[in-house]
View 1 (spheres, one colour):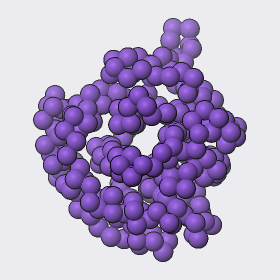
View 2 (cartoon, one colour):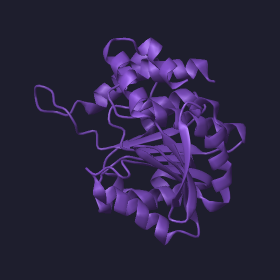
View 3 (cartoon, one colour):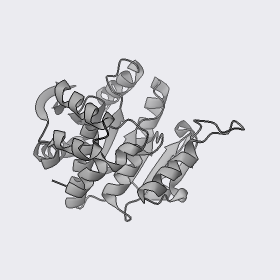
Length: 261
């Protein structure tokens, strides 16, 4: 297992405000490392940064050599004058974690107005594209097209909030994408919050990467069919999740990693 990276995930990363849970953090880790080991290059892009929890996770995994493009409106919060504070807090988290942000690789604006070249001119084609931006159908359709048009042949798209009843149009958008592109793209992994998609030629590679990853051994691996493709679903039992949350709230982040061994 990746002892130092797991320590970062379960301790340091939890100080950053955000929503990526340990199961998905460990999936990100396993997939990015599988790509690196196989010599699969490319940039990394994220739509919907919030305060940077998943951004800094990916930055920690790929190191200084990785090029990560962050895209967000950065319009949250407000200081005494009513100006947004999200961007400054995002940068502050990076300084606290010792992970410098390349501000030339930050796009502060609406992702639906971007062209593929706005991404490829900065980081080249992408090997991993995380979509967690606007949750209406129009946003999902636009962001998915942007990801598809910039993706390396071996690239992955990670969709957040799929099957979340609070955001039903995300589910519609992802399902429509996979149906419309069923000859090209397929899901290979699902968690409680995210669905991971790749081109069909790489389905077996990523399916095995998830199935054989040491850092994911604590989860039940359940095969399911999703729009005609075999997909591994990582099941995180409620009991384990409750123990983890209790430990975190009790100030035992440093020990909480043991729950997921």
